[in-house]
Image 1 (cartoon, rainbow, N blue to C red):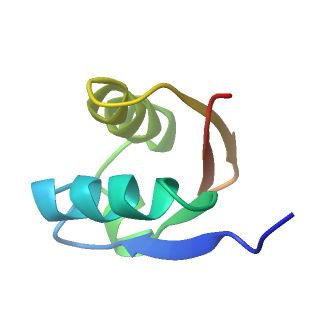
Image 2 (image 1 turned 120 degrees about the vertical axis):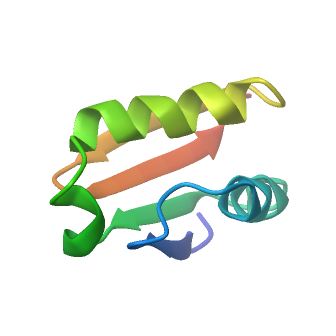
Image 3 (image 1 turned 30 degrees about the horizontal axis):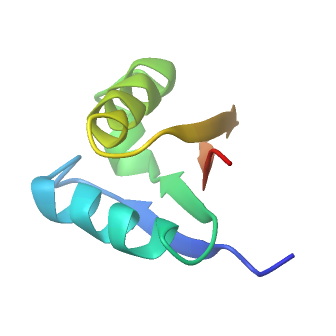
Amino acid sequence: MEEPVQLQIGKKGVTSETINEILKNLKNRPVKVKLLKNFTSSNNRKQSAKEIIDLLEQKVKVESKLVGSVLNIKREK
């Protein structure tokens, strides 16, 4: 299995650029999104992960798992 691409979400939060970067990388391999402390202090991790997945699923079906502050995402087969 290929190494996942690692991305971080910080104080700017979830932007369209972030979603586009995740989608671009999902074409080839899984993606790990780390929700940094300065982002999660003002947001609920679970709610933020759900928001990211909802935005991604408008374009492609994905499987995801939130472990701590890391969201693991891969394309559904």
